[in-house]
Image (cartoon, rainbow, N blue to C red; front, side, top):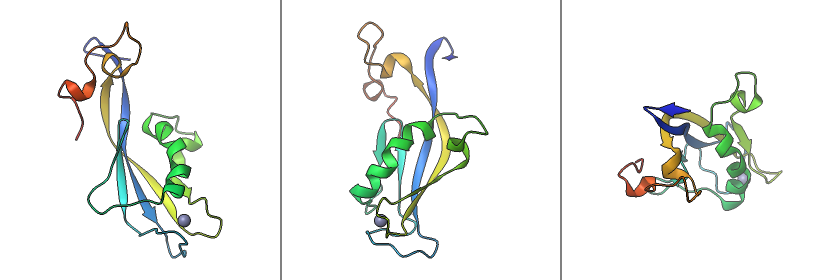
Length: 126
Ligand SMILES: [Zn+2]
């Protein structure tokens, strides 16, 4: 993919929200707490927390949810991840929000293709 001659890719920003919908949590799941995923970073506002055990269940899905997927792909339609504790009612709803462009040269680890890392070029997303 190309944007103004720059090879790169689009990623959705994500917001991962704790939901209970009346279920009883075992872990510390506070309905409405959330964090964002912007590029490679997890971004937490002050006071927002997530159980590290629950985070372990959510993490593998985030890179796929950041990317465009086919309308019929379950990755497009299914947005809730259950806490891995089988007795816990905690879930995490992944919201796709705006998209951002990432330059290949600013994000790759390939030495021959790499330029200034995005966080050093003033393109570090807020
Ligand atoms: Zn839990």
